[in-house]
Amino acid sequence: MQIRKGQDTDLAALVAFNQAMALETENIILDNDTLTKGVNTMLNSPEKGFYLVAEIDGEIAGSLMVTLEWSDWRATNYCWIQSVYILPQNRRQGIYAKLYQQVKAMAEEMGGAASFRLYVEHDNLRAQQTYKALGMEQSHYLMFEELAEGDASAE
Image (tube, rainbow, N blue to C red; front, side, top):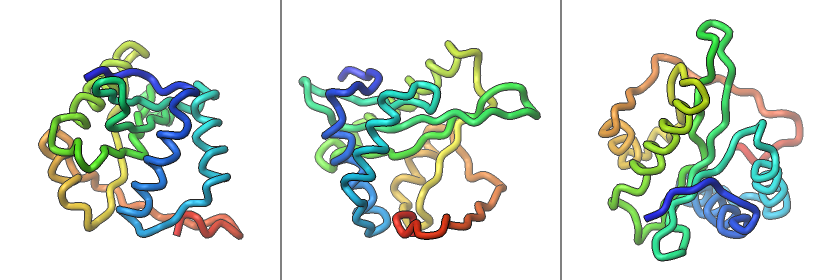
């Protein structure tokens, strides 16, 4: 298995993974044009963050996206892990663990991180077990949100 940063040639796979993840976890069909624009922007805007992909025999088996949030309280970044997707046939093989280890190593190279954070659906118990097994704990924060007018994609 090889873990590497996502690149332009991964666009189609990352779009497909995001589509599959949204449908599987939230029963949402994402607009393909908007999603493609979003993934492409991330791939070409390192200041926004980056994707990591896990390849097995030259095929992408899983991916995640990392965005950085500056903390004035800690004078360092929080690393937000998003858009996690592992192909169903590749789950329970430690792929997410290797991706997460790489996120932590990259954060260390960037000067460290205050913490590593992610969102997970309330009902996605299997993913929650994975995150707990890797040392993550449920945060004491609740999330509040107001959708921008006209944005039905994040319902």
